[in-house]
Length: 423
Image 1: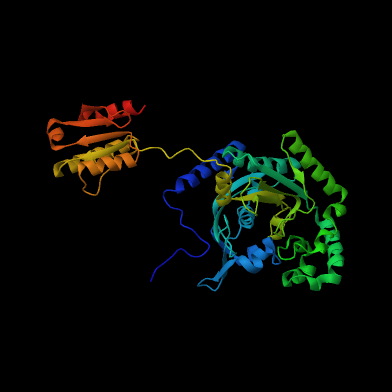
Image 2: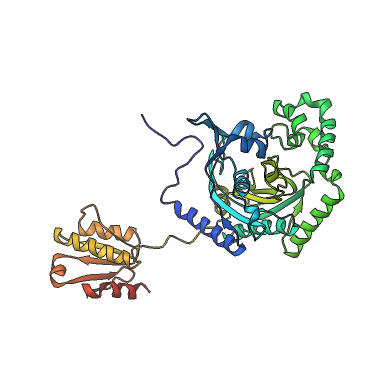
């Protein structure tokens, strides 16, 4: 039987992992500058957590979750997103009692959704996200947006568009919901079965339906902007003002809604405007989620966060012709000639690595010519040759691969000589 990688997943091979490591390095550096601390939550959680916080009317909960029963007959789900888990950890570990508020966190790890595979979208995907819990200050909304943009800018992306909207508070969401039901009810039979189910539970999701996106009733639906109360309008104006102060360009899109139930007030997306990136241009989605902590028994702790796909970040870099610096070359490759030189060569390898010098040697019992070819493929900067004659003399041949020069060096001086040549 031939085994293959499961559908919707991928192997990230050694030749590609360098890109991922560099992206993760940028993320860590940006988050450190902003003073966001990493949180690591379990890959699976109680299913009810996602049902309650993500929303049982969302596609994520209804169609996309990987749910299973464990041996204790408990329903568990591989995390489809991480905001719910971070909020759960915030409440469970009483982070609301920390002296420094709000609590600023970031995460980076695999998520799981059962959906159709597309370019840059997998059933197991890697997501970086940031969450700030404990503050309802509009300035924090602007800071979170700035952090997300800074990650993209640090990897060299320039063709970006920030789109923002206000989803309002509970009061205006309820008024808008009532208007949507009245608008769609007379013609709901024209819509897909999902939208029919959404009508009473969450009519806002009809506006985000991919199947019925061309229906003229969606274009003529009541706008949430018309139902924003004074508090919501003022909040959104302050967010925009902070973005203006930071010199961050944005577009307001009254039709922008997020696919998860917990969002309110500020919602935003960052998109790629690069030609050839693809039909799905969204790189990052985010929003404010006041009320989540209370939903699972915690105190009032307003929050805001975003999530971005690392796969799509790398695709956007490729579309713009951006790349990370090449992986560092091998410092030293040891070539041994003759059986008696193998153990001394291996001992030297350990000493080089202990000194922090990237080193390797042949483990295939190849001839000198083949070993030199291997050193060349690995872009080794220096080759150390140890033959039986050199072993007898207590020396080694040190070859600089850049200019081809070769000198004989006493073994006791070899490491210092190599260090000098590498600087």
